[in-house]
Amino acid sequence: MRKILRNPKGSKDWLPDEVMKQEYVRKNLVKVFELWGYQPIQTPILINWNTLSLGSNKLSDIAFKLIGQHGEILALRADLTTPIARVTAERLQEKKLPFRFYYLGKVFRYHARHTTNERELYQIGIELIGAKEGLSDLECLQLLIDSLKKLQIKNYLVLVNHTCLWNELFKHFGNIAQELYKALSQKDFILFNAILEKSELSKVERLFWKELVHIRGNKEIVSRFQKIVKTLNGFNSNKIVKYFKTIFDVFENNVEIDCSLTSDIDYYTGIYFEVITSSFGKNIASGGRYDSLINQFGYNIPAIGFSFCLEDLILVLEKQGKTFSKFKLPKLISSKKNTKNIFNEIAGLHRQNKPATLELL
Image (cartoon, rainbow, N blue to C red; front, side, top):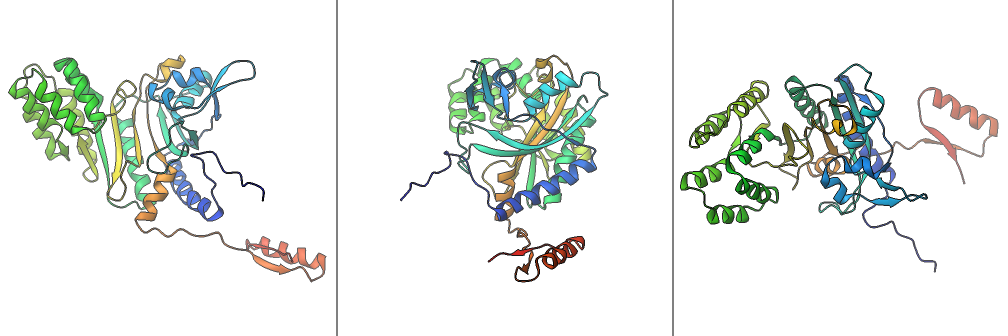
């Protein structure tokens, strides 16, 4: 018996009914994106390694690296934001701002994901390029929420933080804040508390940190945040507080500030956020402001965006009881009839937008 060849580890075939699930998600999200004026954009799967390395360092660590026929170093794209940043700088510098793009495409990551064991993923998301912090942040959050509502995702929560908070903490506390940040990034609260206890921070400062990482909630939480930062001399919280209040002036439900939320702050330059649900063990969307990225390619303009993992959205919808439509089978026309009449009958059904095909014996 001939040996059956399998797909490489971390890749997957999608059968027709599974593709229908993809199409449900894609069509609904694209409908929302286009209502907001976002246009489709596509970039190559095969990219220059230098393009990838100009983005986040985390992407370089997880990307597939390839050697071209002439010795050039290439990569399979590990995200879509970085290639879009490259094409914006390369081809759109003379165009009117802002740009509103949406995308759907595969990304490839060397390390398999814990949730689905996949290294080949579909990302779908948006980029709002050329608009500074402020209203564009609120547009991005509203578009994210509209997308979740369109898909009828239940019990979701958008967690928000801002790099300004961490920048102030690094400025005020120095290296110890860097260590605490790393512990929080790993979701390791045991290590976080151990670092605090071994540090030379005062009792007041240690209490500040312990309270800070438990600050999560809606507009009522802002006053609590203001109260604890007052215990620190010289800590400037004015910008952070103003920003948090702006968020809650617009979003009363399903959006919370989470001061323990960390992200790649070498990449993000303002707001960053993620979406969680009660039925899934990890976030189903993430994004933020990345005002420095496009400048790496020679065009100094701000940007903000977010992305979903298509596979995660399907898993969440299934866990929440969503029933997806299956492929509608066509009417079978007997091939025993006169051949010309068969094709005329099929053509007539097609003109009525009714699926039909040959019954092949």
